[in-house]
Length: 188
Image (cartoon, rainbow, N blue to C red; front, side):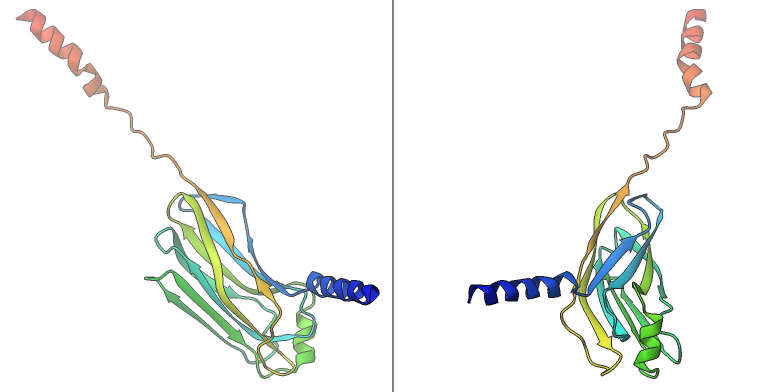
């Protein structure tokens, strides 16, 4: 009995070690205010072919300004549909792409290794440590066109360093004003 439990535990660990994960990859480790932040959304360890995805992202719109979305090229052997919806008031971004027309073998051949779902760009508006989260994610299997389960997704933190405001030097005339005042006072 103990051997069976041990084998079952090893099987569970093996399944979890190869679980499909949606990760966010940033182009740099930290940014300055007004820099453009590029975040790639990647799927690792899915081998059967994806027909599409849906990502619901959240961010603080007063800290990160949305710029644009570029979809990955691994869903496009034929006709595909993609949508982007931004809710500026709530700091929510909805990204959706589907290819329901191509054969799963064609899609699986395009999607070997890491799959780039989309690349999203933001502008760093304010200094600080800002969250970029995946609130919900769906992946659709290319064989059955159904939502797959058993995957995980992660958020990330974006470090934005403040650029100190430039300190303007006072005008030379203002620096000389006390000396002029003293000279006028001595003449009187």
